[in-house]
Amino acid sequence: MAISYLKKETETDTQPLLKDFISLSKPIREEHDEEGEELFKEKKFQLWRENDHISNARFSDTKIKNTLEIERDEEKSSNSLYMLLSPGMTTPKGRRKLVASSFVPQPPPYLQQQALRKQRRCWTPELHRLFVDALQQLGGPGVAIPKQIREHMQEESLTNDEVKSHLQKYRLHIRKSDSNLEKQSVVDLTCGIHHKKKKKVVKEEKHQREAIRSRILLKVLCSYLVQQPQHVVIVAWKMLKMLNLRGEIEISINLKILFQEPNS
DNA sequence: TCAGCAATAT
DNA sequence: GATATTGCTG
Image 1 (spheres, protein in one colour):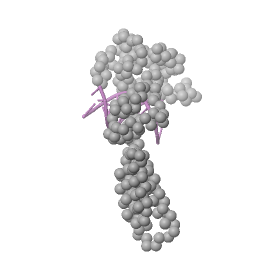
Image 2: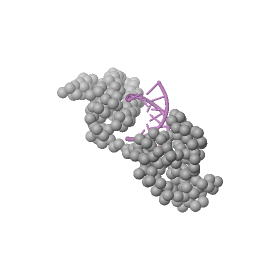
Image 3: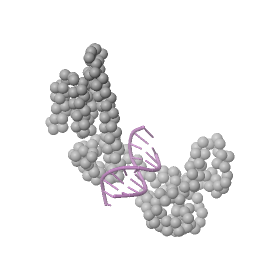
Image 4: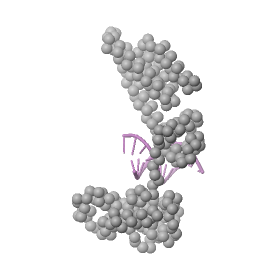
């Protein structure tokens, strides 16, 4: 089914590519100066030609078999991309011996990939919420593993790979926001030191300190949301000490409330 | 087999 | 640039 689609594509859309594929010495720019899209495809195709041994190796037969319902026997497979490889050449893992028997150009990989690549999973807010819930139940993003998360989510349509990918992304996000937080803390601490050095505290500076205090609270809140508040608590404590603010109690109370919330 | 990471694609 | 998929490795 997909093969016939690809064949159709080859016969219609990629006709010029086919032509140039056969006469390789021909300059790319000749007939397609006004067709940016075609030229783009052409260049990609030529590039693919130059690296076809790499592309084809990546284009594993296992994937083709697994992804699509292709009725294909060994005879037909000689008509696949593999036939473009040198005779006797094997895949990186040596799964198959490849023998070129005839020369039938195939559509470029980007077209094949379009047909073979699985449909993108859309992580809806609801799905993500299930994911985060599962993470919380399983001890947080650093501890939970994809399989457990998937089982916990009880979402039949989800695959382990999808969860794994989402988890990877989620962890990266956390790491990123943590490092941003650290950078921000450094800035704030510098600001605090600066204030301490000054003997006279003008009104404007008082406002600034209030702003800093607000930011601490905001950070604590954000950190609480990602279940990693410890770091921010330490930073907030240091900042308060350096700034010599009178708001310690007020802030501690806020922290207490925040930390108690999950149990209530 | 699976988690984790990196490369690649969309 | 963000996000998803795929490939590779231990």
